[in-house]
Length: 304
Length: 317
Ligand SMILES: [Zn+2]
Image 1: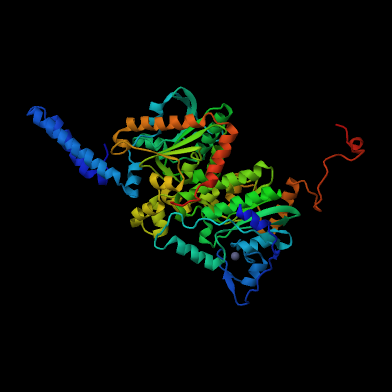
Image 2: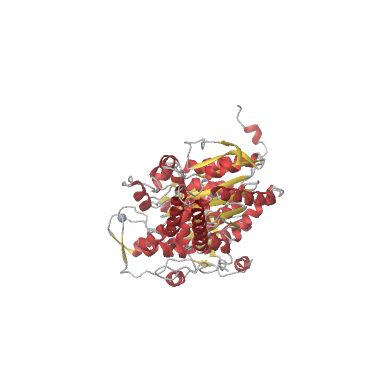
């Protein structure tokens, strides 16, 4: 397996620092419409300081915010056959891919890194929504399989952060096959009793939601994230009525029992660290807790 | 019989034959000869048309209202069929039928989408578009089959999972994901047959199988040609182009390694001779099941998982 040798080979530790952002860049909050300086946005983890709306966090910022001190190592993902169907609509799929690759500097819509979260070894796979809507084809499937295998190899937790409209249509039925492939991948982690946590971000829909993203031990959702199977347009045309307020939002899924919690971005890392620490039986300082009672502990036990 | 657009010349000939059959008073011999001549012409035309169906025409054939559906297959192939209802959580979903029975004398669990055959039954079965309850029932029945060492046969025929507010509220995505997971976890053989439409997540939910059979003119796709055209071409006129580009035919899917075997259809498609189609699928299921049955459960499960991990490595070849 070539990707195995790739990541085992020692590499320069990449400490991701926030890039220098020009001062005059500003963004508009899609929720409240207020203008926010990009520098403030980076500082606030892309949460609107005016209304608390969670904007989409770029994949690299996501890695930096989740790992301890932002320290992590990216792994090279396996090479995947390109454009298996020789697909073309108004544009060639290969051209769309090249554009997305040029824009993002990445090969496809998934980035995988490993490091520690709250002292616990973790592999994190993050979707890049800017790369063709985070859609899942062979490359993303292979990336998730690699991430799962790495987690098993390192006895690490697997954290997946979807931000995806679903399967990549341009890969036809092969994108559909990723539902089965990624399910096998995350089950490998679960079989080894390693934590598998899904951090659902906006959006998690279609084939991505109907596979690995809904199979976590723990589902954490970001506030306001759209999560669901069918697209809202498809539902509206099928039932011919307006959808209820908050439909398919993180809070709606919490209410319907599909996620464990909705956690604001600022508290995500600590929440994740706490959960991983408990699941992996690690103390707050990162030491392994002993389950064997100390001498005299039995005497001190209160009566029933 | 319903005829598709491209079957029009065939329909006209068949109408003529029908007409002649009712002309019993005049010259019997000449009529019989004429019928024979026309029948030969019909067969030739059918053969020519069906030998080179376009992906969009196959889509229409796969959705043909007279195409045999789940219940037709079960009635002819499964003895002592005993439907089992409910997901034990919310309700029963008639879009997916499941139950115990015997296939050629052997105990089996049969699960599949039912589209219905007339207005009433189509509404009752929600046109084969399942809600979470359907997938949760499928999962429950698969787990039961696993405990009793009973192989699972699935019949796939759905435009897709139902896109509705209620379905989303009850966790459509999770229900599909768990059903896929259940398929992949079985230690008994699971054989899937795509008998009509294999629509996206709603189809693979019961088709992550050891052996995936597909009827010659069935389709299996991540999205319908209509849906794909409206998203990628941004108009509905490109449906044919989308059907082409998606490679959703049994022939292309076999090259891609997404299915294992193509089951030929009778002349003029399954709807021209449903009993012949049902019987021939029965033969294919029997042969493949016989190959899978002697295998150890753990080996079956591991091979199935490896099979899916390996799909897509070679493109169209
Ligand atoms: Zn705002």
